[in-house]
Image (cartoon, rainbow, N blue to C red; front, side, top):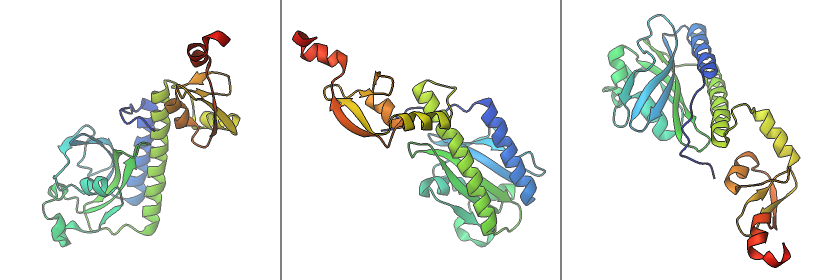
Length: 229
């Protein structure tokens, strides 16, 4: 089971890459705002904001999110896409704070942590009516997936204490450990490819496809059967 207490710390290289991503979106689509938002408890923060002309959102700005009426609140509650071509034509969005900034159209998708919890959203906003074509939706989903892949790697590295591993490294480890894997019948530790016994939670994060058989680790063997060790 994934540890939900891990707070993902975003390295500077990822912040730079995500900045280029939102800048590209805003420039390519000729819109004022492309954002990556981050939620923490009851607040939502402008984490990355495109450096585009007319963008009213600035990194570090925070708002209360739950019950706010923000577009992003709906995205995180439903964990699904939200498309609002023109909020001025939809009474549901009459009290949306973004309208005060003249951001009347919105397309957003959720960004999730590997645990399934909300990290935030990636979204596009325009000061004019915009229905955002299926091609634009597909592009935004692709960029969202890139961000989620980065977060997944950071999450695993921080959880396991190894900042230098890539997803490919984890894949190679999984390939080495395919087949039957020994699990201690007493303490439930897992024996890895190098003969080390590690906690089952740590193992399952990086080797979700492994098959298990029972064994007994050295420490438990000493405790349970001292006469044979």
